[in-house]
Image (cartoon, rainbow, N blue to C red; front, side, top):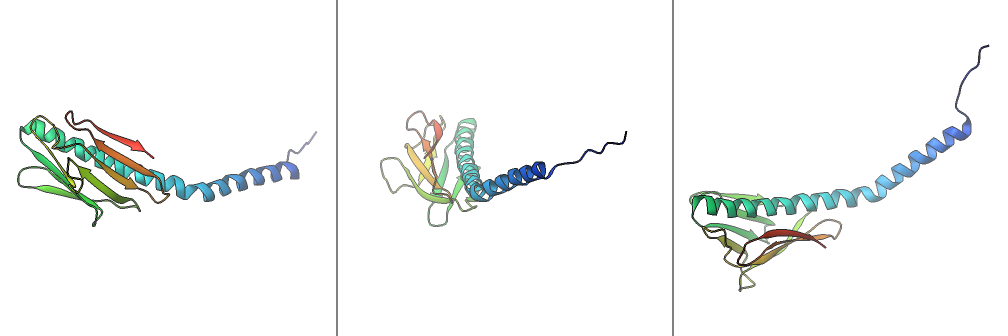
Length: 149
């Protein structure tokens, strides 16, 4: 007996419908997912550089500073007493504000040899989809954290 197995037209239509739904979902939600990921990567980079600078200040028993520049969408952190690293935030992510200490216009934070910041503050980043993340440096203890909005 020679029986052939084949797909029915209904089975093929179901497969095409599922693929179409998946493609439509990717087109509609894809840019938002990419935007959120870019925002998250930028915020994690800021968080890690703040922590790196704080750790370096404690390890080398000196002061280290991170300075944020909203106008150029960038920040600079001290790697040593004589060198620093500038990081430009890209991918459609905007550095909206950075304020530290008692002066709301101060866009820099300095860590002392104990890792204590010169003042607490927040860096606000917004992504292409309108989402935002705050990177916060708490005063006194210097804990650095990230919050989604």
